[in-house]
Structure formats: C-alpha cells, structure tokens
Image (cartoon, rainbow, N blue to C red):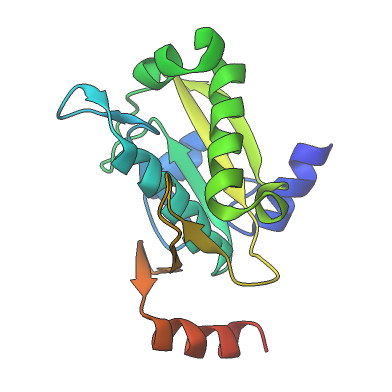
Length: 178
C-alpha cells in the first residue's frame, strides 16, 4: 500500500512496469544507471557511481519527480546488479536497499528521502532496482561524503541532470518554490 502511494506521488511513470519504462527509454522522468556502486570499466567499486545515483535522485526531487532504474544500461540493455548485490550487506536485495537508503539519507537528508519508493524486479532473469522519487517540497542539495562540508544543487532538465551555479539555483528556487 505504501509503495503504491509513493509511486503515485513520484509523478514519473508510477503505473508503468519496468519493462515499459525500458521500452520508452530515458527522458525527463526516467533515468537508467548500469550500477549503483560498481564501475563496469574499471571492474571495481567506485564512489563516483554512488555520486551519480544521489545526484539523479536529487535532480528528480528538485524537478517533477521521476523513476531511476539501476541495473539498466543507457541503451536499455538489462545488465542486472550482480556486482552491487555482492557488495551489499548480506549480499542480497535487502542489504542493497539498506545501503541505498542509508546513502541517500546521508547525502540528501533523511526527511526528503524517507518516502522514496525502492523495489526490485527481475527482468530477463536479472535484478533491476526501481527508485520512484517524488518532487520535493523544498530544495534538495547533494552533500559530499567524507570530511568536506559542501553541497550542490542539481535539477532534472529533459533527459539530463544538471548542476546549477549558486545564482541559477537561487533563481530556480524562487520560481519552483515561491
């Protein structure tokens, strides 16, 4: 029941299946990421992959909401999340969801990420993680990991997530949250 409510709030494509979202391709409210933590080129865990997940979720929150599919290449090929699952606590979906929620809460804040809907589905025998994100009631900033205290503002525009400079972020905030 809660998952259905969260998906309806997301305003992405809450009634579409993962297969339908893949067939439609990336757009203003749908983004594909091959992995959440694993760099397919280097063959190792990469914090930059985690950054991209947090940035995409914040971008959706600062715009109209949307759906992030993890385990799907940009061209729509389902690759699955085997490497991410192997790094997750317990090496299973539950552990990956716990890590993902914790990372998003740390980077974006607990309050704004509490109602993100996270679900796993099998597509072509491979695991895909679906993250449905509602638009935020206030600006959401992406905090850095580690010791440095910094935060950036990102917004989804078309089929890309863009970082706005301070003056651009202030102007966007005035228009988006009057």
